[in-house]
Image (cartoon, rainbow, N blue to C red):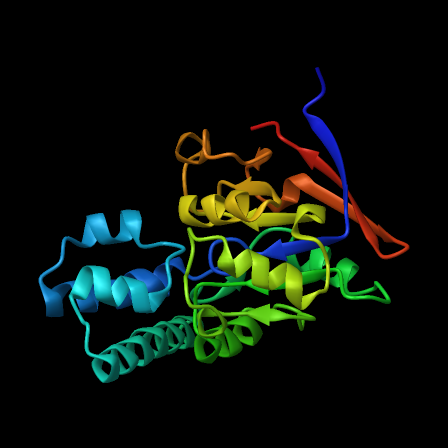
Length: 237
């Protein structure tokens, strides 16, 4: 049985961190600071916080509830990630970098005469607007951030908003995600979900409803024709 599957959809909805770009070193350094400040179990935080809005992580892990303190903590956290990444890159190390095959896929999607992709991230607009160009990610037709929704992943609202921004039916979309919370969000929205093993193990992504699971986006090729996206997806390990 062939491991290569075909799909034809109107649009792709991409998560950002861990799906399009790798921010792991900068995120881990930032969480290490917050774990020390708030006496947190760093291992457990890193295991469960990925793909969740920063404001929700600040509430859940740091116990911050005051709206002004929350805003300040979110700005500090996400600002530190960008600063850490820029310092790493200045030292010749990887800070915020595009993941395998991402640039080729997005540049091809941008050849469409109508918008066929969007980014749907749990990050704020402030962070996303700095992180995307730092990693060299092409300009997206639509960007949905934590600022645009009232409920974050795993709630379906973010991906429903992503489909609406492109004026397409979410059921005619593929959500591309790396985190369990994001996979659950995509599935709950009614979209098909393509999960990548770029931040979590294949085992941790199984059984969540994803239609396909791939090692990374180097396992995906696509063509854009008449405002639709045709994909070939290689599920081999």
